[in-house]
Image 1 (tube, rainbow, N blue to C red):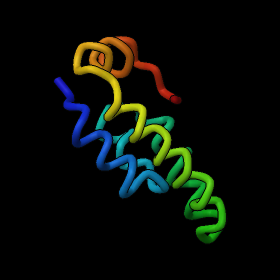
Image 2: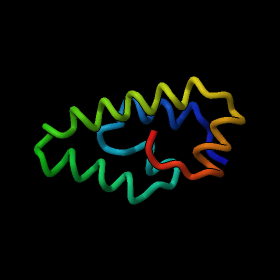
Image 3: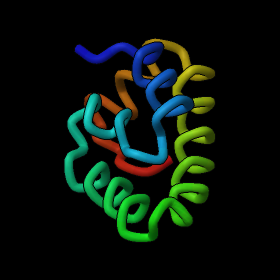
Length: 79
């Protein structure tokens, strides 16, 4: 069972590298975020960082039950 607080903090702090996606088991999405950041020499990292920030806020504002149903059981990869 994955917790929303570590996922949210990883998304906000290390979202550009897809750390929250790795934590939740979304390997494909995590690799996409990591590659965009690395292959664009960090320029794409700004966009990935904003995506991570938005996802982190979404994770932290959901109830525990909603988070589990949506992102753990439902395996919703983006937003």
